[in-house]
Image 1 (spheres, rainbow, N blue to C red):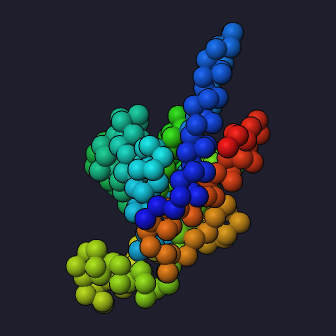
Image 2: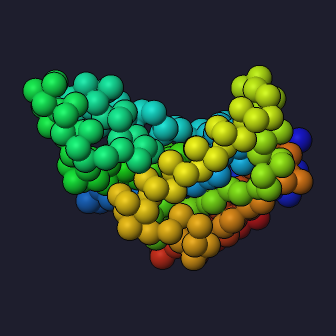
Length: 239
């Protein structure tokens, strides 16, 4: 379901970007237009982060960066994707990484991963038109992100979603939920030194308990337009 008011606001902003690029293209010397929006999504397990990312990408024509982050790190650092994936939103001990690195004749420890992750997220943000899911991207970018979103929901809601999505029993879904939440929280705390539950680290916190996926997308789009209008150098487009 799409809401006419939101649709009008988003289309107005898209028209503004296009008009701005045309004006800059005509200037001499040429000036590069700014990139499109960068949205980061932090989420609890079962809160709907992946669904929101896909919905935003569909509406804005943005690229979703998720597992592609691991692939890019592996490619730029010339590592096996399997080795990099050991650190991807995982709470793994340095000793385990050291043993694995010795076995593969290539060490890649947390400090190196943190550096590679930051470089990768910053490069994706610089290119613009990006929705970055997880990996502490909002904390890495700070106000360099156009909008930093955190998705939450109650345990019962998240359990029901995990059961339906993965075909699990309630006990299995609870174990998956608790382990995923624990792993993601430890990842952000240990790797970036921040509390992922601190609302001050986000521009918008959305409780999806009673929001359908389409409604969550609309809410984030409205917040995105408001955030764009606060950016330096922004000129509000005429209706």
